[in-house]
Amino acid sequence: MAATQQEFVCEHCGERIVVDDPVAELLLADGCVYCGSDVTAASFDGTVG
Image (cartoon, rainbow, N blue to C red):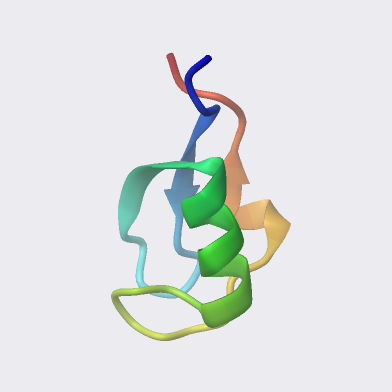
């Protein structure tokens, strides 16, 4: 079974990427990979695909 994918949109820099659940967890823990800002659950927009 494939991992769930969801769109991440950084509230600070506006960067958009589609990520799977493990990457979403890393973003929540470590922040945006582009600008370093904190990430919240509101930064993820449902499932993709």
